[in-house]
Image 1 (spheres, rainbow, N blue to C red):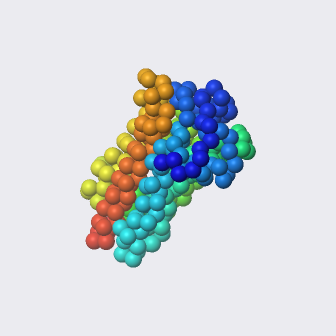
Image 2 (image 1 turned 60 degrees about the vertical axis):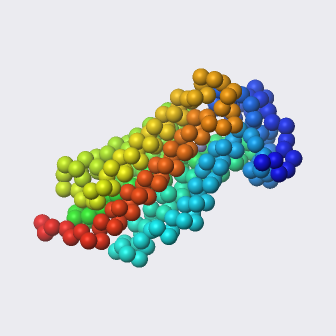
Image 3 (image 1 turned 180 degrees about the horizontal axis):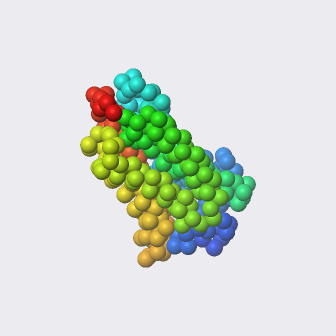
Length: 272
Ligand SMILES: [Zn+2]
């Protein structure tokens, strides 16, 4: 993996304090770098490389392959397809930029901006990803559907504000909780109320949310590196596990939405 000369990597104590966010990752920190040097770090091993590629490779694959599986021309409202595609790309895009440039010479100010970008990506997959689910669940209630879509977008904007201004992981996670509860109430409306949607998509959406929550918990608890500090510096630490779970959650979102879009083609709302 060593294609070019790599700089001397730093230990935890030698890295700037704003980059010391995981005290169980002891080595492999890149020195403060220019944008060009950050880009060059794609080609040698350091403790952010796993984070960059666990989202970078899926981002590329989603970008190129996903359009082939989306039924762009088969749905009445093409915005559903556009919004869904963007939802699937947002979190990995924000994450790759954050992890690649976090050690930029601009310091803490640049770091905070990049972290906000990463958070916005996560908020957007929650927001944009839920819009097709709302649209389909409330398919037979056009007026209510529009009101709920608007309310969800406004509340999501507030969620983005909270997530980008939060200072700790737990506060950031809290910004996503209400979005999760909102989706859960939609699922309940499908099961027990008069909400509609593909019978199989609900199970896929529940798996999606479970993976995302589990990933968030792994990240906060810093397992497994807290048990053997220094062993997971480059590979296999909690943040990389969370990244993989997020990618799996996006795939389940995609499968669930495809199920709903296939189902919507043949569904006729009953006359009220
Ligand atoms: Zn990350």
